[in-house]
Every structure is written in structure tokens, then in C-alpha cells.
Image (cartoon, rainbow, N blue to C red; front, top):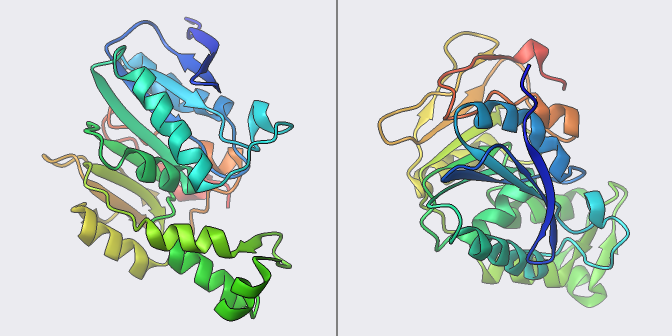
Length: 264
């Protein structure tokens, strides 16, 4: 069995891992909350076998950056991802995005003006304002209270932030890259209605799984789709859960992912 090439490096000050042999094609892998760059390896096994490289980065407060002062705040992370992308452009003519959960949202904010070939998003956050307002409602916090306090910790372990909400409102998501979405119909963070609205605004196509309990990425002529599993929720909150989507790849054709095998 051939060992996949793996190189640790720092790109624009961001810890990263580059998987695969030299190629003109690369995926930028951006993990979600509680993830890390190393989780990209399973996806890289598929992508690199098809001639792609995978560049995975650590977001602030994650992986090799857990003990560093940087915070996972959009006004800090967006410029970081833009700087990484700027370093990538002279090296790879063909760049695609693989984003997970909040990492997908941050990457879309950072790369909204770039001409990416395609994006693969796993359980992405696509409407951060709605998500924050829902968290506020669950914590019984009003906008007036949050504005006065600045930050309010919640029992869910998340801290509500007025500056964060203001930034989100000042930067509405605009995304037009051909995109495929792997999304559970009972996702705890993003409702079906919110995902449908993202589909309409981004021009993605909604398709249904081939059979009950099986999620099959569909690759249309335009390369856009959103796949929705109906029988069980797909919630990618841990490294193991996100790795359940390692077959989600436009480089490998349609690889069915049995929902019964996906950790919930």
C-alpha cells in the first residue's frame, strides 16, 4: 500500500498540512469547531488518489493553535484565510474548497470574491445571524441585553457577543461558487428552510438521496447540488462525525454514504 505524502508547514503564519504528490490541483480544507487540520487526511486519501492535493489549515483555538492568543472571530479569521489563499494562487492554478460547519461559513466569507472552481461543504453554517438569534432566544437574551452587556455566557457553553452579531449583520453572506452541500435533514444548527434559502440564493440544486437511509452525492452538469438525508440526522460535531463524510468528493464520483454508518 502506497503511503500518502504529507508535509507540515506554515502558510501566512497559519499551521497547515499539505497532502499528496505535486499537482496543479488542490483543495483548501477548513475544519469546523473542535476540529483540526489532521482530520483532512481521510478526505485526502480520496482526493490525492484522483490527482488532487489537499491543504488543510488550523483555525484559531484549534489544533496546533489551542494555546495561542488568536481567537476564532470572523474579523480575525477572514483575513487569515484570504492570506492563505493568496499564497496558494501562484502555486495551484486549480483551487477548490472543502469546508465544514463554521469553517465553511468563515471560508465563504473570506473567499466570496475569488473564482474557486467548486466548493464542497459539510453541514455548513449558511446563515449565522439566524443561528445567533436562535441561540439568544434559547438563552432568553434580548438584543437590548446583549448590546448593554457586550458578551453573555450561556448554559450551552457558547458566549453570545454583540460585536460578533454586529459583524455578521454588516457582512451578509454572498456566495456564487458552484457548490455541493452534504447536509442532514435534522441538522441541529441549520434548519431545512435556511438551507433551502441558501440553495436558492447560491444557485445550488437540491437533490434527494437515491434510497432511504443512503446519502449519494449527485454531480450534475453544473457541479452544484445539495444532498439531504431524510432518515436520520447527519450532525458533524466531532472529528469522527466529520470523517464520516470522507467519501463526499467530486473527484471520486458518486460514493454512497449509509446514514446508519455515520456517527450521530
